[in-house]
Amino acid sequence: MYTILAKNVNDAFYQGMSLLQNVGVKGDSRNGPVIQVPTPVVTTYMRPKERVLFCPERDANPFFHFMEGLWMLGGRRDSTFVAQFNGRMNEYANAEGDFDGAYGYRWRTHFGYDQLQTLISMLKNDPNTRRAVLAMWDGDVDLGRSSLDIPCNTHAYFRRDRYSLHMTVCCRSNDAVWGAYGANAVHMSMLQEVLAAMIGCDVGEYNQFSNNMHLYPEVKNHRELLTLTDPGNPYPGLITHVLVNHPDTWFSELDTFLRAPEVPFQCKNGLFYYVAFPMYRVWQCYKKGMGREALAWVDAIEDEAWKLACTQWIQRRLK
Image (cartoon, rainbow, N blue to C red; front, side, top):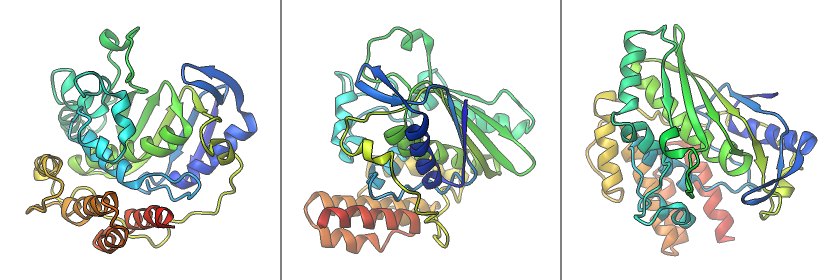
């Protein structure tokens, strides 16, 4: 087994690409040829809140990653909201326009109760519990099933110490580019930060166990990603906005935002007004071909990491 100890997602991404370059072997998958690590990989993020990837060669879509994270925490499974930011998402939806394995729906509804609220209660009442397990895999419906959307991340384990909430996520099949160091690093760290705020803890380490870490070399520029040189940590000095200011109203305000993201509303949690709403307006302007107006709206984003990522992503397209 290989281990990666990383400061943040940027550090982890370059270490992961280097690992695949050095020990990766050729393999086959249902989606075509892969380069894969021959054993499991554990990536430990020491600063999981530093979740924004800035690598220009990777060109991660910050709007999609951030909005999908909120959509998951809202317990949604429909494609309508997330497909706004990534049209390819519709390819994985079922005939009804829903995702069979949507993580947020698994967290909040699929098993007949809200797992997140149960975990919050458990970790508040018994800080020493070792039973705080979040399920995303359901053997009754996933094992042997033919679907375009079977959960890759299967379980998450939570552990408290005196000050912090630590998290370990288990993944059966992890695309290093789009999954592990792309979407997963954003969504799972957002989950960890929200739960930590709800139980009154700081955010601790985030461990990602990847049973099969791989990359698709035939995809545009993926092979080139293996040879990137780490430019160093771009995070020093960036001021990031906390996800949760008022736990008591956070989930209801999240629902309000997801229903009408284009409409500003009175809220106690500044994330929605100062980060989510302006990011949505930036995206609207960009999709309408109003690039300069989009960059003007970027200035309203009060999270320097997401602001920088949005600016760079749009500027690359305007060029």
